[in-house]
Length: 183
Image (cartoon, rainbow, N blue to C red; front, top):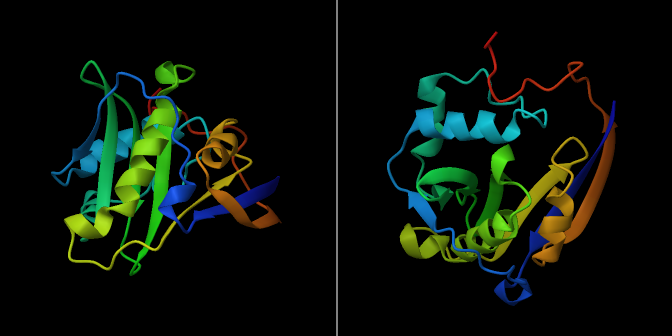
């Protein structure tokens, strides 16, 4: 399957175009929890061919999440996780929005734009929470195998495409779904 990947960036915080706020708090998960992040990864990405972390061990998840500058932000609808953003600020002044998305039941309610707005705001201030350089660039990539609103949401918030790639990618006949391994 031919896959298009778009790389987007924001090099000035003033580029952010906030979405309308919705009454859903965005909270940082401050305790490193491989179980939580794996749950979010499969629940959000199961329908979109998120495959790269499915085989990670508990220890690999832990080691990844325990690095200074890695943060998980949750959108909570009445206490229930509606979506998440994983920030990776370990590259010296650059913060990657490594993973972002909503659980299927929460799509179409404005939560995605709100969560992305808050995630970008947190990316710009990540160095204030860690002993890391100030953020000078926030970036993300998405592809044609991701959710259909991903690219448009990133662009609507002010992220700009700086590179596009097309390449054939071998994918299974169907995404793994949010319950990989379940019968």
